Length: 240
Image (cartoon, rainbow, N blue to C red):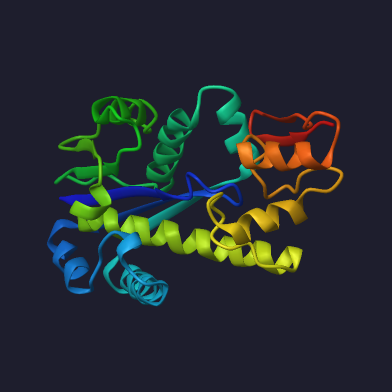
């Protein structure tokens, strides 16, 4: 049986993308993840996460492991917040990550484990499975659990890929704008200072305009309402 793990990074930050990582590894290779020290990305140093990420990519070449990464930009996040909410968005992103693996038939089946962001784990599973191409698959099962990244190495590996990809995105944003932005979370003073600098005549494209932090700082700088950010059918369009 092949095991698939899916997790996200960056749900709460006010800056940057929400990233979903997805990995696919044979059941007999799960022990290799454990031996390599794979666990929830939050429990690992940045250096260790990068070491494990590099190790995983090497095994993708030598052992045929697979992975996919979906990076959801702030504009799409804002659209979700204004419509059906982040939980629905995450089910879409999780399904997109699974579909992106482009898996071929496997007689032994697949075991898909998701880190549930919904308070209702079963509802999260149902919503994802409804979006997986040609689901149900033969001899396969899909489940979702809270704290799956802590309890299932396959999900922990997905969390590491998601976290490291988001960290790289944050570095790219910093290089683009020319100053540090911290963790991206509203609780980080460095991030709040960065948001102040990223709001001029309009909020920067890498900000999540629907976050209260952006709305509050916009109100301090402008007497007009925050502009609407519109996205439709996957085409990112901003109207002012």
